[in-house]
Image (cartoon, rainbow over all chains, first blue to last red; front, side, top):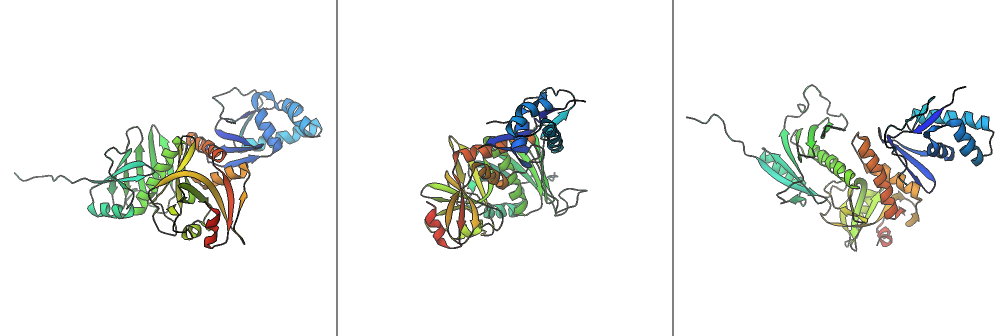
Length: 105
Length: 276
């Protein structure tokens, strides 16, 4: 079974305020507010840590959930975020292309 | 030997909004008079303009040959150091490094007004400021912003302002980052009140998100909601990733420095007792 890698899209701007993660698309100025799971995923999406490891180390401890079920949900979430061009997903590690806009604070 | 060509007299005026002088050149004296009336109170005398536009007046419908859609939306793009601004009723280009540009439009005040708004929004975006869809007013040496969508009460609260309040605008506020805070400037950009703001400025003391209700009250707003509401009211036209990101971060910077509250009000003058 292939592993999935996720990386923050450098073409978005992001800020975390009072625990609330907001992301704006640089392409069309659409503003997104991430829920807790999506925020964890976004913050851990370094392009080199496989999604299953992120789920195991970051998501499962936060929510009382079975790893297999959590991974399935995380994959759906990652693909959804990728469809909005917030995340990049690949079956190979994603090298940093340019300075990641990421969070400023 | 008779003259084969006649030199066309170039007329110009300087429109100074937010402390930024913009020179407008035209060869049409009637258009110049129209602009002098439109921007009365915002005319400057500065020799050094930060931007200079040559206006090419054409007949309505001939602004963009081959592209005849007067209702086309605004499009602002950047390519090789040059901004291109288009809408159904105008076409313009601006090269910031050269501080020069041109506008092709018919002889009306609305097209150039839109160009000025766009240019100011682009300049402000690079400096941490913005144009905000809000009324603003000055009282006791402080500026107050009242943001909201159409119908939220921007015009109403402007109309209710007592005599000691100086109206900066009832529609589009001009916010410039300065030192550790923000300064709001008066603008000639009007809403339903159709009254030009006063050409004065003051440090921004508060941003109020307008809501109409059964009583006058001020309630705190969570930082996330403050940032979202601010972003929803920032006027930004450019399809440019770098500037979008700059504008996004500017909004967060603003809400970290300026108190943001919800102002619920009934439409009578007593609401101004809360704003000091």
